Image (cartoon, rainbow, N blue to C red; front, side):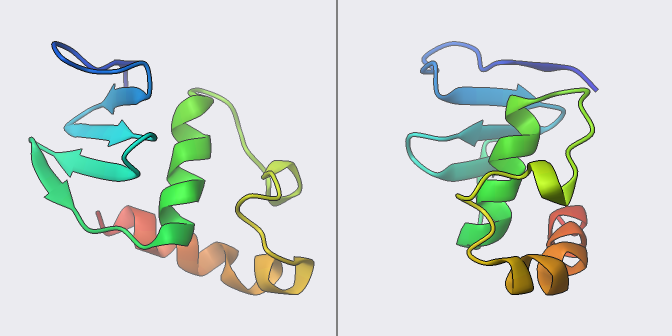
Amino acid sequence: MEYERAGAGATRDSLSFGLFELNSAEESLSRNSVRVKVQDLPFRLLEILVERPGEIITRERVPQRVWIDEARGKSSAAQLGTDLASL
């Protein structure tokens, strides 16, 4: 999968990957130019993954902006993966 800065009219905060465009400044995700509703926590995780294409991101490496506390991080990691896969 290729990751690139979004095309015409995009800001430096927009990244395209496959059919999707993620805009960090607007905290929005679009698929084929149609906005996709994504909850806050899955959006923040997706943002981290898109910012680091090709890297393996472990739970231990996910910045504090996603994991509110360690207990929540352990219990919700699998659910976040499921949420992102359903997009």
